[in-house]
Length: 449
Image (cartoon, rainbow, N blue to C red; front, side):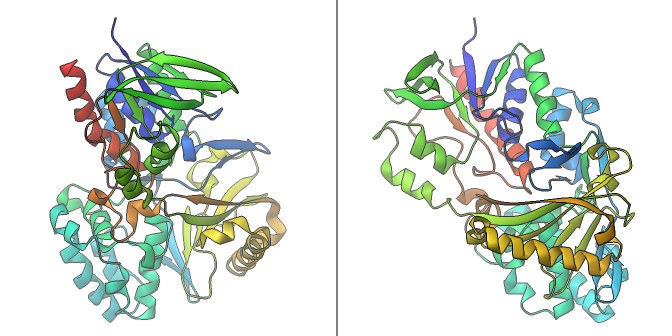
């Protein structure tokens, strides 16, 4: 009988890793401490609407890392996707079409014609450079080039950063931004298309992966709290579950895959002295959080036919308005419509109910100024604020090869996946890319055993 591989965490990273391994006949057991799948992409039902934990989209559609995993294991038909292609800017001068490619930049009415030419001269060389070249720019901030631009063009960059990274340009590495432009370049095999699950809820991606693992005789178990990963003689020998205080269960395995932020795992799941302290301190620098305030609004009328609108201009608190029910009607009951508005904030704001309330009021006022019928159509609102370790994906000096490696030197059978590990991409797609990169390392270990 084959040894069971334990995967800790049932988010995109853990489940893509599990699906790839299950596809090759390995026995997989995924343990998740939460009662639900999806990690930070988990959704919930609220007043018959499907609410995502933040707004997520599948970048680059069928060129995405997530989709490539589905293709490799042969289940693409199970993931029904709705295209997100009706995107616009909104400025004081009205609505402006969002450019889907370099050619569209010449028709970008948001900025003056001379600025469009300047923008093309800036982005074209970026789009045709190599991934290796972009690594030289990882220490630089995107603002090194945007600060030299006029206000209208800066606003364009801010909108792109909101769509791609849910953050402002000052927090984005120039190298990471350039890789995003490359992956959107059709002449290099890329695409600028986006998608969202047609059934509603971004966690439907995780549910399909989970079903596949179970079909392959694996297990996906929620409400399973891992207390410790047990290492002896620099080798993994098992994990300890503690679902009831004081009651522990040892599960034997020689292979464990950790799929939540590495700096958390290193500080929580190992006995003192197992992991070199200097290594832990190096990884602890990845504990840099970003925060977002988002509000779900349910309406009794359709106030726009578009799917995404980006308000641009310094006077707008709202950085993105996502018409979820325009992407797929599955998220809302008949006759109702769902939108989510968001803005990046300082992490301290996410812990301050008063400041959150002030931001929500500003966003409601701004949406009403764009859509006068908004207030009258509003049925209810549900604000939320969250902090996540996302800076490691995109911040200067904290991207790509600077992140947590997939293995810790000197320890056999222990692997790490997820977007806090070596990977690149946008949002949850970087977690899937991490699993793709880690997979050959796990394969090699299993072959040796």
